[in-house]
Length: 279
Ligand SMILES: [Fe+2]
Image (cartoon, rainbow, N blue to C red; front, side, top):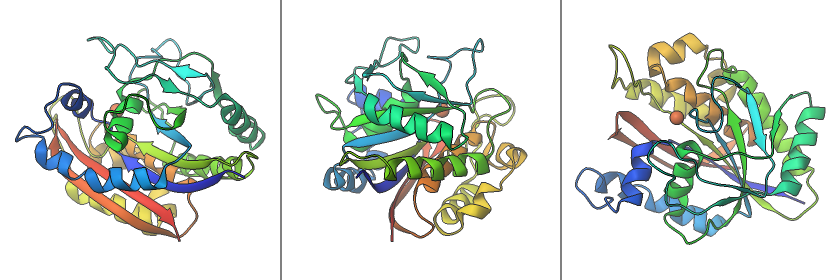
């Protein structure tokens, strides 16, 4: 039987990917941030998942405004790194797990979560940066990946509670998968940041810290945060935090905080990394 062995919340800041790809991680700006990744990478190496379900958002790389799926699941054998305007990142191709992905698709849809099913999809920094954060620069990614794409780009995105319930449904799907796979769920994006207009560069460490505390101890309450509160308290792109609720929903009610690291700034964001295991 498949077994969920942990959950990771992780920012997916594109500049972090660029720093890794361009060999700049030792520079004074970046070194303090990258030093904080080591315990997370050690945990990941020890847990050694066979499969990561990566919950992320596409940034108009695979999908444009022509088609905006609320939840899209990747079923392919492989997913190439997307060209986001300056060529694809020099990272390995992401290998999927079609057998498990189709099982998850069937389980979720019969569980009344209506997914868009995707057979061909480039994956952008939303997915590849968290892999780089957790695995560094391997020749090949050490696990298979099932991409789950969430719309947080075009209003209206799903609610936090819908994302939390989706995570619970993913857990039921994982538990029912017959093969002996070790699974980690990654929820990516956030934390507070705003990329445009008068509040560009806005971060709110107080809100983010309370969000992380609540995500660990009282996720049902955090799931109730309305969209307007994310906008006001976490900036116009802070809504990406709802994807962390998918990860949290996949874990049981009680979790142990294995590791937390935050850093201000990376690019113009408050960067977060959280590792949880069930107790
Ligand atoms: Fe993003």
